[in-house]
Length: 119
Image (cartoon, rainbow, N blue to C red):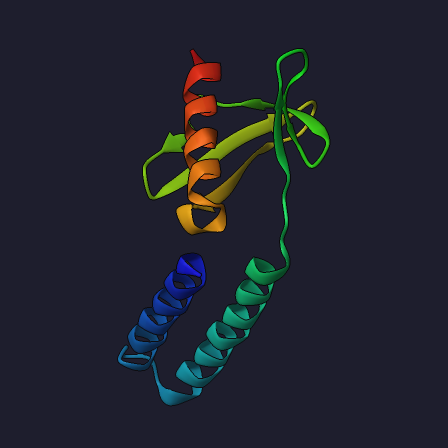
């Protein structure tokens, strides 16, 4: 839910900036409409996206049953994890995991496993 609220707040601020800018009204209206459409797609993506993250001692990290390498640029905080990873032959990707996306003990376990496996 925190991620959804952050998306709504960021899009609201962008809409306020768009409407208060020096653009003429014929430019503001399509830009504002584009922001609202993007907000709809972003909220829908947050509601329907379900990634599975697993760690196996033998094979390492798997995201959605695909072996990945967790990159050192991953940021771990008590509030969120910005998980940077790279699959074999693919580009670098990132997943934001907010602390209310998992039960509290599972979120802590994920933080500990990321810190231990990165060493």
